[in-house]
Image 1 (cartoon, rainbow, N blue to C red):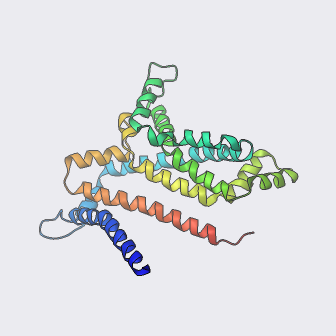
Image 2: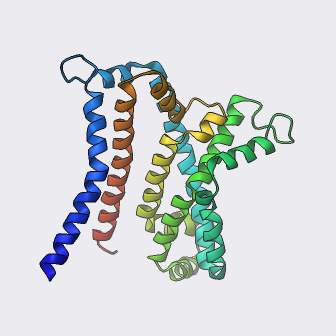
Length: 262
């Protein structure tokens, strides 16, 4: 009976892995066919040599870092305060943070354009830097479910109230407690949210395209519409970036679990 159950689990895992891996392998194989009659990495070489690739990827990297910093500074104090002072509001806060998952990105960005166009009181679309700020705020909203839930999960693993009371007895203020006590105890949770945010920002298309910013997502779409082999190379690279982020989450999470308690 146990062997039958294991056989079924293996079959289900193989079917699931095949559904996921076969298209990826086919995409990788096609990306190597740029040179007639033999396999080569010409498509990857062309992509890396493209100045537009370097510009858009660098821009998205910068936006990802800014989004992570703002997301952490917004989510950690909020989650900490909810755990410490307003635990009854936790379901409502979680509901609000999950809204970006059910509201399409195109609806959110059209709302931003409606509220912050060049004729509004806050004209954030009037210049390139202001539009970058608006795009960064859009990314913070889009990544809020992943960032907030990672931090909330990290806070559930520590005794927030006891740590806060102990720090207050020693004379620490709120800022000191937050940055010198809470942040170090949820480092792996913050990194998990940061890597997920990074993966979301790097591949995002809708917001960057409608705000007309030179991000990596619109570049992927542009290359896919005009070239044959380079889109496959970019798809493989995007996949590797995403899975590298997921691997780092596992590494930091495992190190956090195995680290000795001080």
